[in-house]
Length: 169
Ligand SMILES: Cc1cc2nc3c(=O)[nH]c(=O)nc-3n(C[C@H](O)[C@H](O)[C@H](O)COP(=O)(O)O)c2cc1C
Image (cartoon, protein in one colour):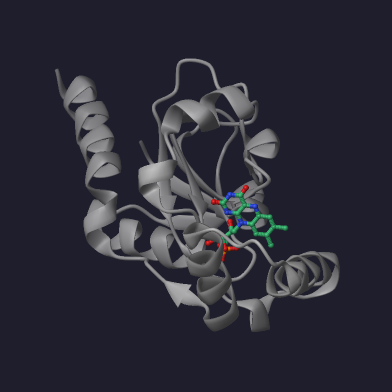
């Protein structure tokens, strides 16, 4: 694998891409930058933020490059999320796929996404029969949080090292 390509809206996926770039000693590019910097068919790792289960940007890169590993970055607790769900939702074929917990920051959300999330938060606040999970979720999105850390990248590093090993053999 030669590079990391990522699509980030509020910065959490970018933070993972930069951490991975240091860990794996590979350059990290946004989808736009990659178009200029990388040849078609380059072997890459792709990281994209999750919107309604879809990994943003994946469609744009999947035919242009050889994507060897994909990760979706979301706000959901990793206990509730599996790579399997992302594989189905994004119709990923034969590419190792992982879920990474990013974070949430309402202040960085603009336009239609900001509107959507503020509306969701409002209705959560007004709802009467809240479950424990609803209360926890309401707290997390109103305060914001950041769960990005290097340790979460272990499985992706494993895929990168495996691909490097296969190339060397
Ligand atoms: C409109 C919208 C839809 C979202 N849908 C999901 C989702 O389906 N699953 C999830 O885990 N997170 C979801 N999120 C949360 C983001 O994926 C999360 O905040 C992520 O860390 C953002 O990464 P970024 O900072 O790189 O843009 C959604 C956020 C927005 C604004």
